[in-house]
Length: 306
Image 1 (cartoon, rainbow, N blue to C red):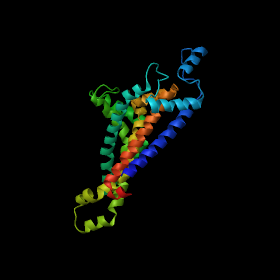
Image 2: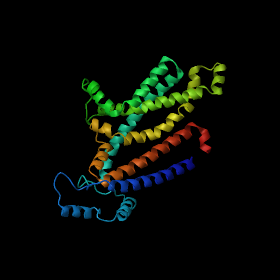
Image 3: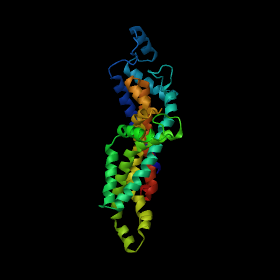
Image 4: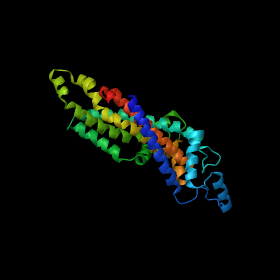
């Protein structure tokens, strides 16, 4: 297990380093100036701002200073689009919101997708199987920016205890979390169905049935754990994908998460904000994959000595 943890940590460090390096040079290759706005800025003022933020230095020097500030001071720098605000403060305020939304979506997706996949597998090639897979395919095909407005119109407006948009009371998390969970539930249903069908066709399952072991006991004690391993493998990247891809839903429901900062950083060429978010998302992806691997090791003792 220690070998797995160390290997995953090293992979995460390398991937995050390469990801941030690529993003550092890519965002600076975007045409335009981060200090040009609707209000006219003179060339002298732009030059002064570039000197203040160190953007007048050669790219290799900027690159070295960026990593030096992060590793030695833990400083992501100031936001270029929101004057007077530290990037670290902006992430600290929005990260808990995005994590809460992501975890809620993941829970909803598991509660919907895993039972749906089990039901489909137990009714293989029957009407329930076809119906479950139709629902799963719909969850994959119908994107969040379509589901979000539909939920707002058909559920939030008629029900007074649900807000159409905003983040002011606990119930505000329900609709955006369900919106995000549909894609996760769809993939989990398909993976669970495939894993369950594969396990149910194994010889030891046939032997248990021949011995008269009840079907519910076979599923609960012998089939469920190995059948869920493909779904567990998917959960790590799925959680990171929910966090990084939630900006559409956050904009639809006016949620103050990290997604809004990502959009703002790209449109306003806020280099420091974009780089900090990419670094943060890369680390989050590595942690999510590590937790997924540890869950697999816990579920399958054979992997502990691999």
